[in-house]
Length: 593
Ligand code: AGP
Image (cartoon, rainbow, N blue to C red; front, side, top):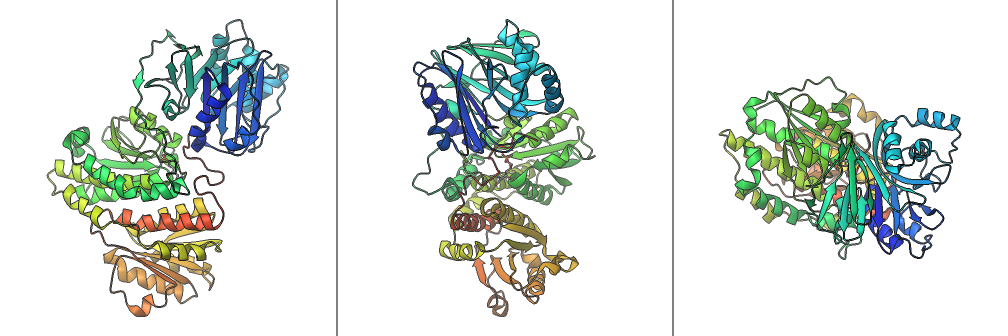
């Protein structure tokens, strides 16, 4: 969360804004820049998206360096005062920060005693005043002393009055630097380097340094560090390409993404490291992720336990690290994440590694911390996903986890579904009846809450559909196991209630329809979602809507099941005047715990 950028070069304001736009997926509560001028700094801030900031910026002629920030609020409401950059009370230091200063309250109290004053509610302003407190003749040393007082996570870009360098420090928040001639960019994501440089430097935890013109100096606790550049392998995030929103564009990319995944995993060289994992060595297999990635984990665990007959467990990452679940060298852990930077998932990886588990990252961003730090990285090949609501990445995660189960199964002599058979799925895959989805969206837009029910893996799909409806439409969508209705849920039903019935699991079809009937007889309006022909007309005729999708006959049913709900969520969101790409209070990359 939060994106930081620093730049040394020309057209400083324009460049900072351009880079910030690439980081806006990390948060869009407010944005700001500070540009070095002859007296100190010119600071501009605005609430909301970067386009609001753009209108406020006044150009400092001849400016050569500046820093910028796009915020996802953690401490202090999302307003202009709390927007970064933050300036020390003596006006000599200015900084942008991504992360959380966990001990900021104690530090702030101490700093106030020492004479510092504060204007914001942020934790980050504490670091600006720590720099003032530790100020010595050596500015890098000042920064090192300041961060050594801090507990928590940070990626910092710092400027000081009368100094033409940008200083930086990092702990548990991503930070990268690219140099091109005399120009330098510091950023939270390498996406800022696209079109600027072909290689970049990864700043590691505990490192601090400065850039001056095109020169990079890095130190850690042992002295000066010689950094080796990494080849830049990321495509510039696309434009909407004629679609009104990234979410819609990304949903429609699903078909080609699945095709890419299946092609990639048809080549043994691409999954060599994975197929070498001897699952017999592990007595438990765990899947960990957050949000949508967690829902993909539910399917991953199902695919693998169906295939190998091993015990598979799933955890939401933020719960995993505080659970008493025993992890040791007989544990195989899959960490699923689109961004590969989700703090809770990274913390789960750290814990698993500390306890000797073997780790596999199932990840979209191939240069991410998760991909880098896990024992094996399994790419999902979804391409850049910009919209906050994960759509094509979820479908790619499901497809990859299905392929992983087949690959590991085959390595253990289990009969595998051939990828060729899975590829047949591509032939039958379509985006369904858009007109019908729009009609459903026209009804849902007026609901304050809806319910989704299902059994077995339909329950997993219902959970993901509910999440899409919640985050993009601001409608409370609750999911229940269909068999649980009579144990409490039915008390919520009246004639205004819409209940979505997921019925794509053959073995429990009749059961789920009976459960749905229990809801309907208490007044509920049903939206039936099924892949089966032959459901009694008596039942279907009384439904408000019947959405019929294709039956895939394999694990990719989960993909077929979600795409209509991604589209329904999208159309409902747009109907309600919400920007589905940037729902309120959320961010694409959740780098705080
Ligand atoms: C998805 O629509 C959500 N915005 C969110 O739940 C997301 O999946 C979650 O934050 C995990 O992100 P990751 O995949 O980048 O780890």
